[in-house]
Length: 78
Image 1 (tube, one colour):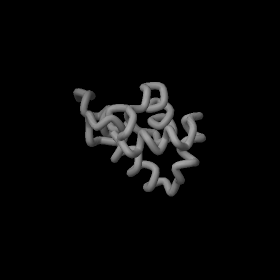
Image 2 (cartoon, helix red, strand yellow):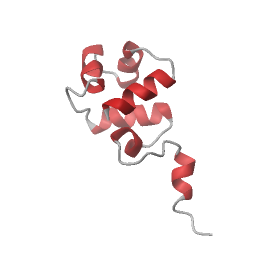
Image 3 (cartoon, one colour):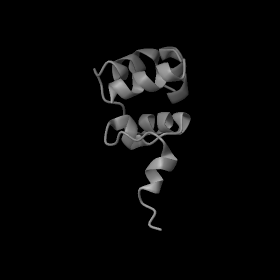
Image 4 (cartoon, helix red, strand yellow):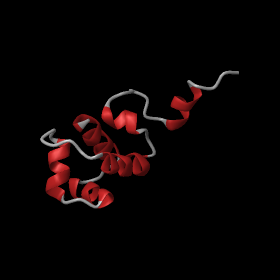
């Protein structure tokens, strides 16, 4: 998960401080999540997923698909 948080932050040209503000957490907490020293609670992961318009499963490493629309198409049977 920590690699995904860093990747999303860097892809969006954000600082660790910006990300802490997005999730309403301290900068030190965010740094610990990004460094893998602590596991972010689900409500914090949810805030990042909404902000980045991606899946919680992507952030947690359960899928490699970060695009919501592409992931949803896997379940549409035509």
